[in-house]
Image (cartoon, rainbow, N blue to C red; front, side):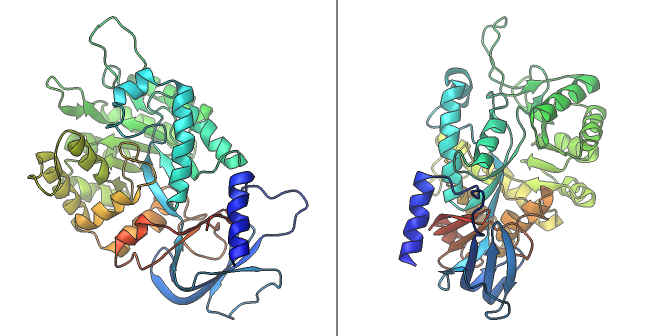
Amino acid sequence: MKKVGIFILLSFFFFPLFAQPPGSTARIYLLKTARIFDGEATRDNVWVLVVNNTIQEVGAPQSFTIPSNAVTIDLKNKMLMPGLIEGHSHLFLHPYNETRWDDQVLKESRAERTARAVNHAKATLMAGFTTVRDLGTEGAQYDDVGLKTAIEKGVIPGPRMLVATRAIVATGAYGPQSAVADQEVIRGAAEADGEAALIHEARVQIGKGADFIKVYADYRWGLNHEALPTFSLEELQKLVNAVQSSGRVVVAHASTPEGMRRAAAAGVRTIEHGDQGTAEIFSLMKEKGIGYCPTLAASEFYEQYAGWKKGSQPEPDHIKEKKKSFSLALQSGVKICMGGDVGVFTHGENWREMELMVEYGMKPIDVLRSATSINADMFNMGNKIGRIKKGLLADLVAVDGDPSSDIKVLRKVDWVMKDGNVVKF
């Protein structure tokens, strides 16, 4: 066992593990584990057979034939789970208390931002998040497509990526904003107005490699910088219809009731943030099968960066509002995706969102479902990942303890397999 572990670690550091060399024999692993969380529920006394990048068998010991050349990995003192799925990431951003968002967009070169993203991708994978949905490069153009390609080719280690590329905003609504009206600055997203322009921009992004389209249904562009809707219902509906014809979906940034209502009525796939969500809005989302990605961790970090000391000071109104919205979402039964808006805070600490979901009232096992099977289904990947099930891809993680009862166990993921390759041991 020790020799196998050392070989895997050396392989990870000195040559890519992500591609099978031509003519090589199959990779076969027998994972012995006493307990698993399969994406839906916990199960005892289960072994898993992995052949190449696929889960070949899942069952009780000796319930299936074990190939003689299988490498046995003993995880009997750990819980085995599907690889975790981060639902709202920005790999091209780093914490705002290190560098303000405006300065990252305006003053960091795209080469620097890509170098940082490479490190962020590795940290994410090592934390047990084998897939991420990345919701925009924030001024780094289409570089997320290049990052995704580099990971797929085995050039760098990182999670599977679903990418939005630039995202779409209404002209004048998004940042950075210059104090000099005539000065042109880099924007954090692509500007488009009217049905024709929205459809054109979406098609451009799809052509550049976007897996889905992100639109800002509202933003802080009011007279007093309050969040207000940016696009009409008709504009959003036309955008959704055009994108769906390509087999893709639209996801919406929306924090206000009206922005959320328009996005939901237009038929987006998920709504991100939802700070002011109401019982009526969540009921509409549930009826239409729209997921809710609350990004609790980002909200808490925004407040802490502004000076709030959690635990020793009263909660800011924003946090009270967020807790109320999340509680209403839980009561409504809407599908809740796990996604923390990581990039606002440190990559590799994605577990912070999961801990806050529990703190705000969600059961740990439901949080695990959100980070595995629910995210996989909502992101149209349920036939590939998100469960420990025969025929799915072998994205798996193992931890000491039982996160279905103590979510904090996920702070330390001990073992990670992505695409049938052990990348952390």
